[in-house]
Image (tube, rainbow, N blue to C red; front, side, top):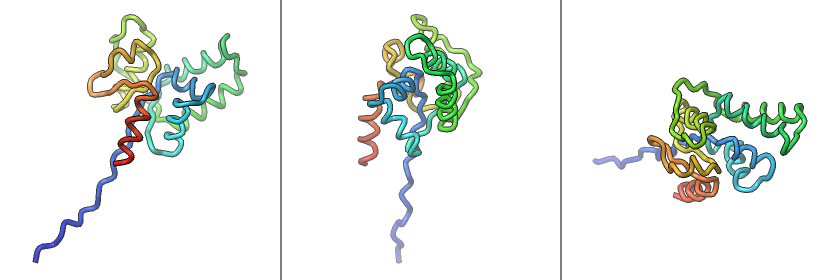
Length: 152
């Protein structure tokens, strides 16, 4: 008698993302689609990797002239981001975006963490579309693809 294949369906792996500092800042300050992505991480539906360089950029922008968040508030936000993310220390130096050297830190973090996706609002990064095996998407593009994959 043949037995039926009763193999358990394998759960799809969670996507691993690197969020550009502009996505974190938009999520914290304005909400919208970047906040939806942060909520996915809070719910454990995605993994997020971050580096000290990206954390420093978030801190500098939130405390800077434009937003002027108090240092105490920024420390609390950075602590929450650290708790939510896998902190990596990139070893490789990447210079794939000569128009905007600040973007190197995002690519370096993504390579070090073996991320599947970089989510950014930065036009220089988005113009790449891919870096190695990683997709580079806007928050809207990522959310559309994520919702589509969750329905399967």
